[in-house]
Amino acid sequence: MTRKILSAIVGTAVLGLAAGTASAATLDDVKGKGSLQCGVSQGLPGFSNPDQDGNWSGLDVDFCRAVAAAVFGDSSKVKYTPLSAKERFTALQSGDVDVLSRNTTWTMSRDTALGLNFSVVNYYDGQGFMVRKDMGINSALELSGASICTNTGTTTELNVADYFRANKMDYELVAFEKADEVVAAYDAGRCDVYTTDQSGLYAQRLKLKDPGAHVVLPEIISKEPLGPVVRQGDDQWLNIIKWTHFAMLNAEELGVTSANVDEMKNSDNPSVKRLLGTEGEFGGAIGLSNDWAYNIIKEVGNYAETFDKNVGPDTQLGIARGANAQWNDGGLQYGPPIR
Image (cartoon, rainbow, N blue to C red; front, side, top):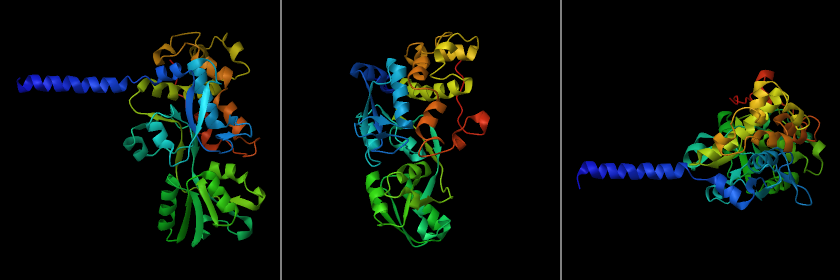
């Protein structure tokens, strides 16, 4: 066998392996199971949190429901797997979950070294600090020598190290695997400070014995773009995850809501027609029915609806849209056009 022929055979085999990886059919697996397996947190109010009956709710949960609506036309076809920060990536890598929708920060190393793809940012966040009001601390720059509670296996630990080193301050880290362990330790006075994403601080504060006795300091010390994650090698599934979020953003921008979506199917606006599947064949391009986005909006709502319901100003968390406002309203959320 000549070297040229051998090279051609090897090259063909490599291409075949690449093609096989790229055509991995997560969508077929999900349809075969009859439900979406979604990895979520172990309990973070506003994002993914179970009630006493085991019913899950939150911004990240609504994203799982939206994917189920896109795939099945039924947002209830989701099963939730609560995961610690330490075990979340392993669960996705091993196929225990189909998508990770768990307040997870997009970083270069996670995106390139774990065999995973970050799809979109469904919540722009940043790390902050919470302390007891009676400590009289008004700035994170006053925390030198403090003991700090946080989760293991997170970017939070690294950000704390960077911040305190840059500001020439000492600290003691008190780390736990489970979020509720961190909350309990801070509430019991085992540490002076609780640090995590600022949205998480507002959420976890609700679990404290006296939430009003604690204050979130003003400093944001990091960029924490949070969003759903999938395994590498399945472009179709990645596209479904991306365009689920983009459909919700475009719906908000176009004024399409869960309440008016049926009426809006009669709209003459070409952008609305493409979004709701009355013009074009955009669903087929990602392996879904043409009413995929209609089902998302009808069953779950647009992005503003899910934000306002779960974490917005009228909820216990009371978070303003801020960076998560639409691009044309001073924010960073931007849905590419469906066309």
